[in-house]
Image 1 (cartoon, each protein chain N blue to C red):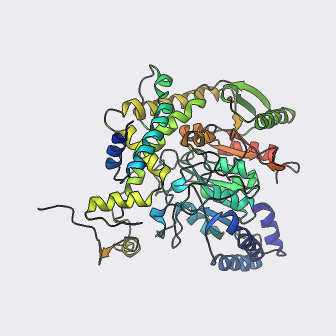
Image 2: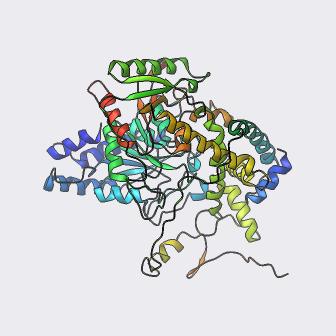
Image 3: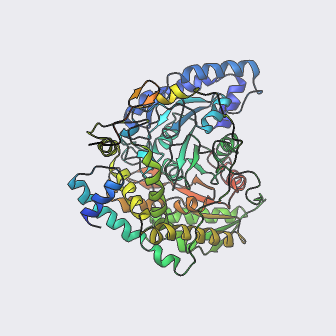
Length: 473
Length: 96
């Protein structure tokens, strides 16, 4: 089901936003107790759907494109009057006092908000197992993870509880769950979409992204969410970067040195088959050398925890969120943060505090920022000869719940997605041929990466290759 | 990374940790630091980069952005403890 298909039905009037709401709410009521995609389910969505239904009856085609579209929202995106927990105990009872800019824009279109979705605590994780609200299961195989950190949003769309969903992507948190759940996952150019009202994790890396069933739907959401925001000084203008042109046929670069050992053999075979498909469609596929990309993860695990330790300093039990009482103010802080944060969050705060501390700053944070700069230069050089870079989205299909117990093995799930956030370029994950595991077909994703501000190029390419009758729509 | 180092970092981070937590975190963080230390060989002799991302100033007129007090109640409602128009905290200066 896509926005385009629903829109057509809504305008014809045989199937209304209220019908869509009721159908999807029934899915939530039947499946969410098991899958645990949603943290809160909104009863007031029914009124939104009724209003949308009336507007279609009155105005038909002359209505906003997202009117009445049932959506699910990751619970680290603020919606006024609703809980914004970031799946953390420290924000369990925090009710957002304002709307994120992207929510304001979707509300102006009359979207129907089905509810808020589960995530790894503060978006730190690759599986949605590390949530104060319990594990989210993959609807395709409930013994497996949906990916993370936006696993609840991926699961919500995959189980048919929303037509699209919003997530956030700091190191792959939209693209990884999209690939594990068989959806299109989009991470815009850094600064293309406002971060105002997103619960910050790594401010130089975070971007809001989307889960959809077609590339066109990702484009529709992007067109209606992106743009300069006076409340986010890092949002870019249309002339911040040079124009990235769309083309009839594209030149695709494969970073062979990035396809590492330890990659699942079936996923690699699917990836290679996809290269054949592109060639058959008339696109030019060439090898490129990007030796720094595969080392991005090391830089990421310095920059990200450093920014996490700074951003999460605000949770002190004074102005909002949980407060655990001690005898002194300092004890209040220490106890609040000890009781409010989970293990992975503490791990990253401590790591970030270490890499930023006097004597270590130059060796870690300074070097990591240098690597980012080197990676941007490496990319710019490669984009002189090619239009789009292609990699797998993840080294494996969805793994089993509980399979990855040590932090480092979990971090490696993001090896292909992290360089995109470090450099700030846009990327899309699209579902390709699934692989068989335990008699279940598990989705596999391929990632396409464009230069800065090349969002329109990714949508153009993606629609040509994947939004076809034989494709995914 | 020793257990005592973790306890020091935890203090700096304003997070109380138990002895068992400190031991486990010392192990994890040692592993992660071992992994990220390859950053040294990647940069080699490359000059250190001082700027982070695209840096530019964003200015606005120094004027009243909105009516005074229009958000006060919404924001105070988020506070764990309040006293009228104030957020309430424990005594900060100790005059003993």
